[in-house]
Image (cartoon, rainbow, N blue to C red; front, side, top):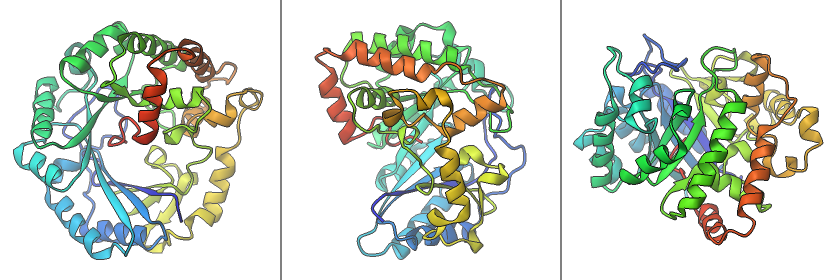
Length: 373
């Protein structure tokens, strides 16, 4: 198989933060056992793929210390076949990035995504410890430790209603002041069961258009925003760099819960129709052609009428199917597509912009936020 396999491993659902908008955190959560972790890695290498991205996720994956990751590295080295290549990514809240951890991540080539919601005024209003303390300064110190160990990292910013109170220039200034040059912006989403805060697309996309204009005017090639790289490629007729722009991600991404349950993607954890089964009963090589995968692929490509009539469909693939599912369960009608409005805006604003070709070429070679999931 030529396509890479993304394997998300949820080491735990427990977390050291109590973010105001989080619907995934569990007060009590078992950690992934060594047996489950080793079996997941074995299933991956036996799948027939040649390239792998192991994405260590949570909750907070560093709550259990470094031992699980050390053991995972040993298993990977033992089981990887000839010609099989793998990359380890870690998504963290940033509170546990001490000197030892940063050194370990650097020594073993991990790519790290750190969650930080922009300036302290926004971040500390929504990303707090379980006893309500602020975390902004601690996370920035953790990032400095990553930098000192030359760890490849990017940051994830969740966009909420609180975020919209600040101007796009406030955000860009924050990232530049702290030399955070690989960034992605995710709208806060509830889950597929309509639980949790969800930012309306009619609020998120206009904000992102303003942010895009401010970024374009800034013309700072060091500042790479993952979504913008994707949208620039799409606006010029190239394939996008993100899974949300793929025609179907079914089979290319699998998510393993701490107990060994396997889902199509971690966004669908707990959704019975997106559940493949337990690791011990699955053959990853046969999953893409399983009845579950075939059904999900058809569901992925079941576009609403507004998409079928749109010239952008062949490029944007209708966006992430999870977003469509969440919006539908929140009672939203697909009567207007803000993603189309955004892509029209990007194409118009960048048609003759001198920096665009340079940025798009860089983004195609190394997608912004590649170390972030």
